Amino acid sequence: MQKNQPIGVFDSGIGGLTVLKSLQELMPQENFVYLGDNKNAPYGNKASEEIINLSNKCTEFLISKSAKIIVVACNTATGTAI
Image (cartoon, rainbow, N blue to C red; front, top):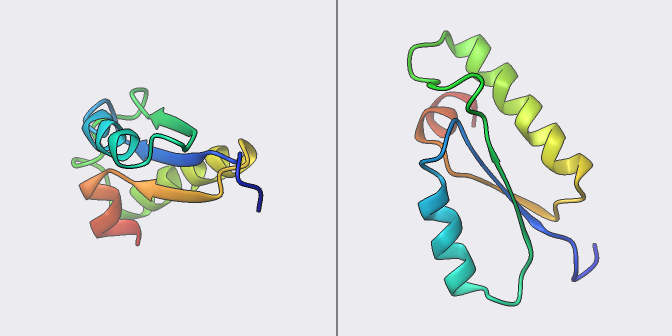
């Protein structure tokens, strides 16, 4: 892992931008990659299996961007997929 690798953050939409803002304020030296899955939002009305699959896709995307750690800023994904 390299210092310049970004921290990945995802949510099912734009709500996670508040989490991203807080992280940027707490860690201004870090780089971030944010994924808001607006195409599939909201997650709350989806079956558990679909939420897990969508969360895996978001995670895979952030890994492809060399994220050194991933923050799940989505309550539905956290409660269902983690």
